[in-house]
Image 1 (cartoon, rainbow, N blue to C red):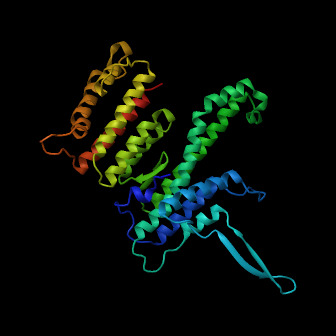
Image 2 (image 1 turned 90 degrees about the horizontal axis):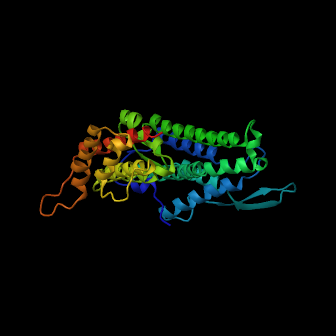
Image 3 (image 1 turned 180 degrees about the vertical axis):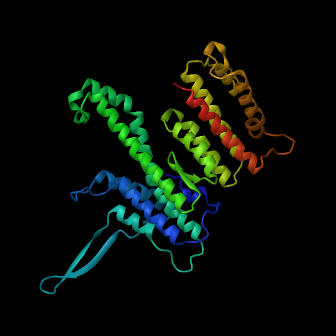
Length: 353
């Protein structure tokens, strides 16, 4: 199975020119954060098998992509002296969290030529483990309605009874705690990147480049928080693709930003019950949002601005030019197209009840 990793997405985008103390600290801090998310042993020293399985999964995925059997040596063997000075041979396998920690914290060989690739491979492991946690939290959020129903129907079987009040309140409290804890962990990871001078940020399962702190704070971060729920998954996927293509200088990043925006418009129309089923493009869905019969979710002038985005940006790069010159956007125009799409998605979602 192919796995999308940071090192490959940004293979052609240089982030680091050398391995310094700042990078050593960053890697040590981020793998430490990963160990807090998935501790392999509890306070009593008992192994948490489910957590080690997560480390194993991330290990195997990255090892496959890097073309190695192990990220670091798992098997150990050594001899100690017994009470009668006899040799006692001990051997076994390190736990996967230990193996992965050794990989991430390994000091590069003297004379390392590709510090950028070396660091990216290790950041890729942190990304994979954070992605597994993101998927767990997303799954828990998607299953919350069923969990609430189960708590209501069978309150005595719910762990939520440990929380005073209704069983459903306990389920909500546990879910809220899960989300708050993970959000703090994401914020810590992003702050670690900032302090290390690395222009990176983690959103919705992926580490991406964030070169402008103001745009990241005012536009990107609110956007990623809003599209985290499962119903906006396609919006998240296409916008992540737009950013990856922009940062790797690949073709048509603005086209994918437009796809993300169009998906958001369709989801709003569908969820509100305004879609008729005969819409043939983004403009028709915009009509649904502007319609007075639907409460004028958008004003007429807002609808026209949206239409202009699709006419001048998405349609321009999304259709074959025939014998005309191949259309393209400058880097500045591409940034504008992506940031504008993010802003539109953000305002659409904020208007949802």
